[in-house]
Length: 105
Image 1: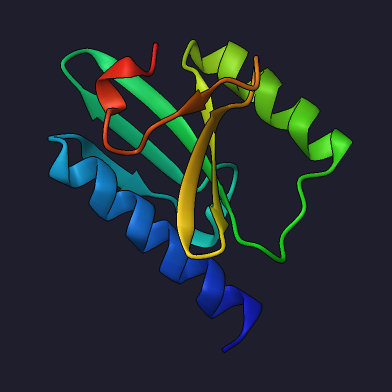
Image 2 (image 1 turned 120 degrees about the horizontal axis):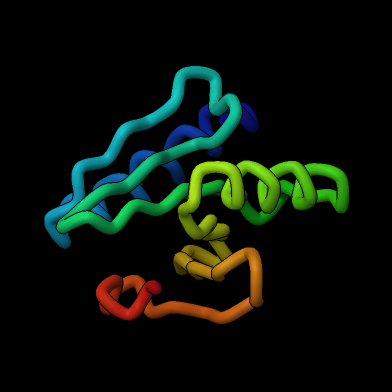
C-alpha cells in the first residue's frame, strides 16, 4: 500500500471516529493546509493525521500552530501507533481518549 493510501485510510478512520460522536467532518482535498475540520455544537477542531511512518517536522508544526491561531481553533494531531489512534493537542501535547472527544477544549 502506498503512503498516500495509508494516509487516506487513517484520515477516513479519524473522520469516522468524529462522525460517530456527532461531529460534521470536512476532509480537505490533497490535505492542504489541513487534513480534517471537525465541528459540533459551536466547537471546531483542525486535525492533522500522521501514520506510523510519517513525521511532523518543526517547520510544519510551526505552520500548523500558526494556522490554528489564525482560525481560532485547536489543532489536534491524530497519529496511528501500532493500530491504535492517538489524539494530541498540538499546542500543549495533552493526549485525549478517542472515546471521549468531549474532553477536547
